[in-house]
Length: 565
Ligand code: NOJ
Image (cartoon, rainbow, N blue to C red; front, side):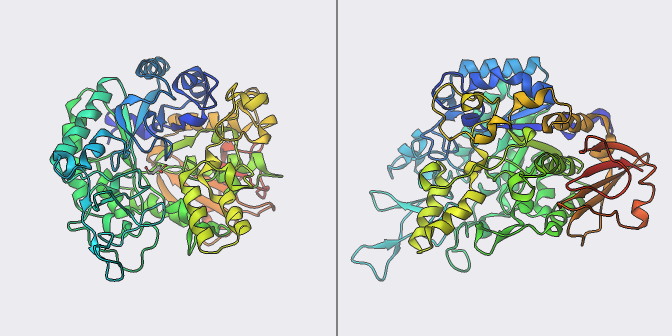
């Protein structure tokens, strides 16, 4: 592909805004759209090309807006449609694009479509998965069991029984019923809604759990026991996904031949092979995937709430595997942080002595890979996990469910709270730290989730003027995406895959060879001998995370260096 017909998003950096926690303009303690508009200069200065906005639609907010009751209206807590139009205009003025969240695997149970579907005689009945239960041999007369053994990603059965006795499928919370994409009228309604947003000026969609939309015929039982999200084994990889995505491309995006959008599919448990099928430009499905393999490498046998110390070799191997698999065809996003993950610096870095170094090292390593980097709000200043101590401090439905289930299993509360503090999604959702003033400049009211005390020294205002700050490093890094071709198009070779502290790789094209080195430890680390490292001392430093640049010699604690050989 020549760079003339290369789509803009290949050299783009995307910034994710979680609206509840970004900036509150009206003092109700919850972030909103006018708040985002008021902070656009921060994003423009950072140099990002596009913003992915997590859901702002009308919602009962059981999953913070990922449960939508009206796809074409803004929730009053976030503002109005006029506010959104103003945001789009203000972004376009600054040369930034807006990517909306598209949550169409499920709706809220308060969506009028679902409300209508509760009536077995209503034509909308087939818009969702309504099924009779299975007879329960151990129950009383008429007692039933759920239609199959699928379990929700948020734990417990994926089926909820309605007053009439039938069950409906919900891959997430009971208030998030799954839409039936097999019903053509559902697809038509979704495509028409998407066109309505594109007509308003939005520049693309991030598609929530999009690889779950096609369910296998007959909804067969999952093998093994009903472990959390066991249905993924049955649903992920269903070939119907490709038919739906190609149809969506034709029915929505192809209708705007003069515009280039960004489409990114969030995909649970996806393999690199499936990702290639989805993102191969010739197949005309999606532009890129947003996958989880690398952020799951430190999960233990019991999953996310069983975190293990990171083995750096696993993390390197995961990223490398995807680099290789998508080298010829397809495209990936690059991220360590988002609204569903604890803060990467708290998870894999050092938040005490080497806070600045590890925040910048993580960023440097990630952005030197091939793909489209995503920066999650607060990451650009090195925001850390919140010291959650009590269950009452959490707001996330997933945390509440995990606590409930673990307590019912008899696990000691200190143990549960200890792992939740490390892994909970609420760690990413505490308010953005704009300054060292009250509530970190996020709101004048009472914030919906507590502000981290470290806002006193960890905030945007303090970092703006400091050339050595995490924020300044991010600005330099983001600019490189535009100036250094090798980052977008170069080949990728992982070096020293078995090294436990060193992350090293080479990016290369016909003109350049860029060596990337990062020391994931508190100790000094010698550079290995070997052909791949020759030329390092005489090389040209592209970027380093120590203020004096990349002095020759061993890597200092948490040092990152990218050097043209
Ligand atoms: C993925 C979203 O990122 C997450 O926040 C949400 O809980 C689930 N999908 C369900 O929509």
